[in-house]
Image (cartoon, rainbow, N blue to C red; front, side, top):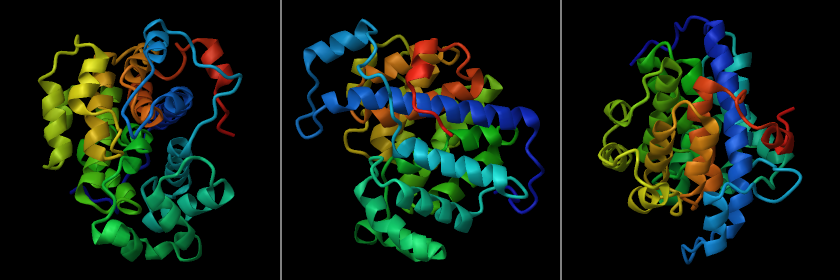
Length: 309
């Protein structure tokens, strides 16, 4: 593992890439959230007209597209990187930021585990070390929450892939102690880092992802042609309906690799998979946006998206 105590300041280009990733993550999150209510998790069904709207690229309704907990947590992570003296993950500081953001606005769609964990961390942020591993009957969370927020970190550290993976692990462990929750974060951070470098590929992401179901899903995605219809890819790889890292990350990374230089195309492709569509679009947006930013997005999208403050 890289020596995380001796991290040089991130180059200006990496700081810009991290901000671009954050902006695109929030855009994907807000865009995806507009489609999310149409998907019925329990039945796994999407109305036919919703699929038709996505394929026809009809923008979702609403004068304002609010973002969710995906962006709220990504904002906290980015804040820790920018405010920390050495630009690295301070886990206690990150726990504090997560808890304060949750306390300020609990209606962002946080998952059950975060409703249990974050109120406790507000008073005792250093207790994440025992509280996060105790979630879900002592197994820790293997959900997609650590993955959905981490792309800006990958952009920040993209000059060193080993460091990217190490910092992603640290960022994940504060809330997602299960090895596969951590693996999902590593995979997305590596994908964002490779995106910045112009080297994004599914085999390369899988190669640096810890063993287990997330990595297996990425290898399955690597064997799937990028020309495959996104809906079929989501059926094969998962679309986040189980809210697990292994059910979410492979498809989102595949969609990003399908459109590495076009954020709009990447988000429409991801939306076609439905499922946990705000999270898959946040992940895809953060990865692609780390390279291209939001400069090529239609102005209407950016005007509708809730600002980041």
